[in-house]
Length: 328
Ligand code: TYM
Image (spheres, rainbow, N blue to C red):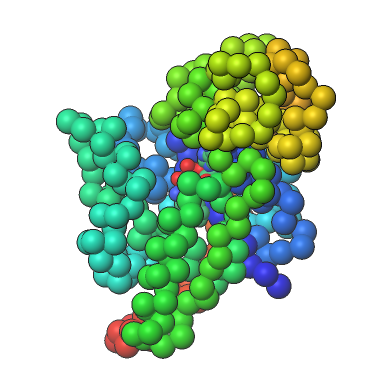
């Protein structure tokens, strides 16, 4: 059976880009494939937070993952720090990737430039090695992600192939799976930048838990283009195309189909906002029930982490054996 793995950082807010680009595809796959999904709390340590912040965000994110429809009986949902093999394999990955390769990662360049003058952790630089460990530990065939993660999956493939070449067949080579619509949800106030917690103003980023009124307000205020023609053209009309992308992803059509019938921006903004509200409202309702019982969330996560360990510990043993380390 095809093995799927993907992860998300508990950084406090989950936004529409996370949902349309990745999370909902996790739900789609869960009954046909063998799926593993990690809440990667160790990755979140690359940017310093006050004590307790990452832990709270981990439980909130777990509630969102179950609220969107991940079924704990079908999907293995785990917390990265509960599965020590991630950190253990990450060191081997750091010794398999080069300084030059890590220096070419656009995410590191972006994030470190934005943090100029502030503390830049070594973990921010070696982040892709930990991500490679996340993926390779599970003999993963497919990694469903948004467009921004392509480079991280590419470097994971390079690391895996290099390791296999040196130490014999050890890792499965994974493929990135990026959705046709929603792979790159853009900031509503700056449609040339991707929607993200750090880059966006509040008005440009739609959070999964935003109430319907603020969602509608954000869409009504979305930046569009100078003329008034509704047409999908990312280069010439980034604002309108970004709305069409979201409308298409929310209603299961192509952006070109979504554009049909519109002659003005106003109705397009309202319809896109309403489609997103319809998508998020039932999720928010389930979220409120789930977050009320943190004990139950913790129980579900420990079952997932236990299952994750059975796979990850076998892989780590294979790695150490193939390298030829003396085993205890
Ligand atoms: P993260 O936590 O930033 O985002 C989680 C998922 O959401 C997707 N995404 C988007 N998709 C479309 N439009 C957007 N504006 C947008 N913003 C985010 C991301 O592509 C991602 O799929 N490094 C990863 C986490 C990670 C991981 C892994 C992923 C760690 N280990 C192993 C896959 C496999 C990250 O920071 O994603």
